[in-house]
Length: 309
Image (cartoon, rainbow, N blue to C red):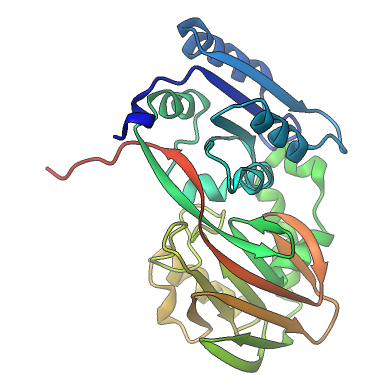
């Protein structure tokens, strides 16, 4: 551990999305009081309780006020917004995951329990540098997709999402898959230049899919300094059933319905229709997207690495 990290945290700023899938602000505050405030750590909060309250502005203000540790409390959208604003600063990101999918937290192997998450931040013994996917002036950190997965953005019910969590994604996704649709895409990257038909184009920075232990592909890590392009050419229930089965057995590459490419610098994806472009759980555009790889975008506080016996 370097000298800077060996110093005990004195001040922490929490950016809290009170509308996240599993948000429990009172539990958070009680645990922070027990584990941090009572130990002399100054803790301040921004709580997003309604649409329009900016987590980005709150993060920038925390940096202006000199906070060296900023905690994102929420789902992937909140983590993404806070991480984006921390780029280029000296501050470290902590994550208390309480969203519906928590893909970034899962990809970093962070605990999903609030208390355990706070313990990791308190200990502050290790960090991983999270890569990013820059689109225009913003950076995203889990997945960017066009196709059946991005289409569910139109069908999501936020009230259902709050009550049943990630299962709220499942029914809209099944409805899309049953339509047996595919679209024509133009893919342009140093590693691949091709026009093809696919039901889903996914650029992944984390491997986790959000459905149990299923992953889009093995070996996809959020700090490996490249992105992973997943092209699902199969369509319909049969193809996706095979994909899920192989993915659950940790061998998605064994099916002919999916191809993988590693993207080292940039990629442009264009669709032949106005498909939604989905990034970190939200809609960011339609039809096409240009993504640039951001290596080592932001340091994230993670658990200590267990030594092999």
